Image (cartoon, rainbow, N blue to C red; front, side):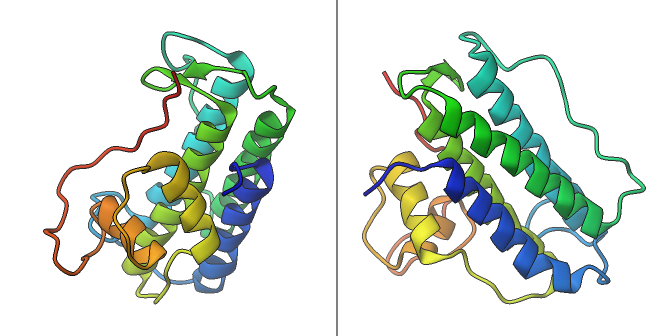
Length: 191
């Protein structure tokens, strides 16, 4: 399986836009799936994480996250928030693609550019799923991007249909023969 790249981050953000933009007139103040955040806040959170990951890759801190934050105007429409997500995905993609493979930055330990790219794809797919639940839209994460996330962040993933396994691993779905997960973490570190 190939490493996660900037193109994958951009593809995840484009998928998020493709799925959610047609529903921009729905009630984005509704809770995003089982989250306590609204659909709007969840989309803004995705942008925040993508920008934070880009900063980590380019700043290369080794002891914590850089002390800055993204603030999306509360007046921004869902369309504008999705544009911010795509912009932040572009920044992460550029950072990942420009970074030497031996670059390390902090994410609960040392993480390489492909780890940050995989986390960006995961955040985008998983929160798109949460938002679709909140908006009443039927959608599942794409197979190829889900497989990249599983390969990089969940090396001990059980067998099964890849999107369903990803949703189960992150407490968002059922998997036959397994209890629903109530806590989880991914493995982005490299040693």
